[in-house]
Each structure stands twice: as C-alpha cells, then as structure tokens.
Length: 101
Image (tube, rainbow, N blue to C red; front, side):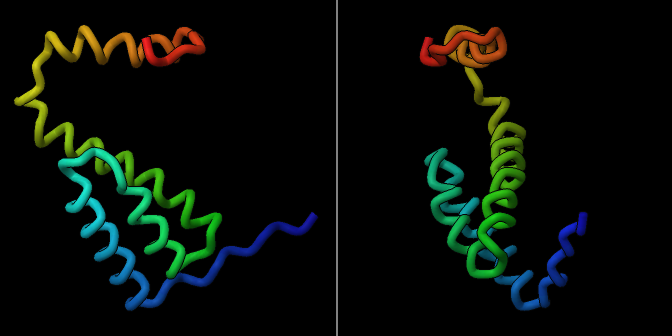
C-alpha cells in the first residue's frame, strides 16, 4: 500500500494571509461567541485544500475558546455556571441523547 504524500509547505505570503485572517476572525467573533468557522473556513480554503482547511478550523476554535475563558474567567457567575453549565457538560458524558437539559 502506498502512503499519501504531504503537501508542500506554504509560502510566506500564504502563511501571513492565513494568520491575519485567523486573527481578524477571532477579534470579530470574540464577543458574539459564534461565526468564527463561518469567517475562518473560506480564508483557510484560499490557502489550503478543503480537507486540511476543515481540520485546521478545530484547533483555532479550541484556542479561541480557551483564550476567552482565560480572559473572562473572573467575570463568571459561578452559581449560574453550576446551574446551567454543568448539566450541559455532564449529560453528553453520561450518554444522554438530549443535550438541552
């Protein structure tokens, strides 16, 4: 069986375009909490193939959410987090089909 080959590394222009697009998309969607993938996926599609572009959006979402959490964690109302957030995290882990509560 023949293994697939890796794509060539991106040139500096593509890398800067992608990084700038990711930064702009993150800034625009920081407060809204949605839309990052909608803005970011077309930017990624311009510089890489569709399979890699879709896969590359996931880590950006992870770090975007982690950054928001780290910046805003002191403003979180812990009682609200426990009341509404914990069941939303626990139910899928327990195998419950209805994630809405």
